[in-house]
Image (cartoon, rainbow, N blue to C red; front, side, top):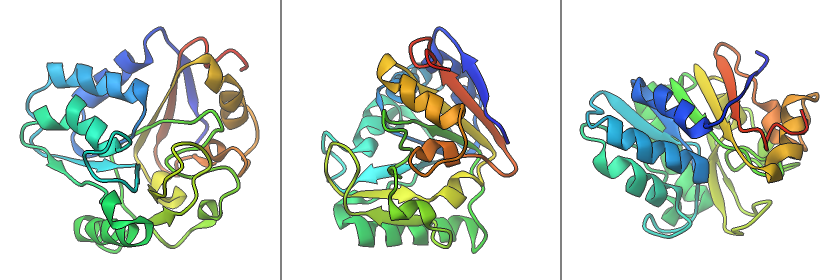
Length: 224
């Protein structure tokens, strides 16, 4: 599935529309642009009954830490998402035990089949990393496990991580990238205008049976 690249004035606003209509299993990510989307949709939609929230990745810090993706999502959305079920990655357990715990939680929800998430909100770093899958890291080659620990991340903050693996991401039904800013322009070109390359992990995100939409502002799209 080739990506549907859309250059829009307000990527976060476009994402709000998808989130407001979402049901079932929804995956959240970290980052400033997703945070804005979460804050806006929290104002629009109080009732999240029937929605299970999951995470793309997490830093191995306590859930109230400033670097925690969960802490950000809790403040922006989850604390006001009435009726939702939240599946937090337990970063405080460390990369190995935290990944194993999340794998068990996924198995309880989906059985032995690969998780089939509905809407997945995904960010991308200026090095083209996705989730906590960094350029050239061996975790990019994982094909059996659903969740792995990453001991040494490729960029700051330099704390260990827990991340979904590529097979899980590529099994999603509706993948939505949110990418903004001039500092992401080169990464966008490598991820979405070039061939698949493990040195640009986002280029390896190509859903097998779903859709892939990339919402960009003009600055992020400058090198396409």
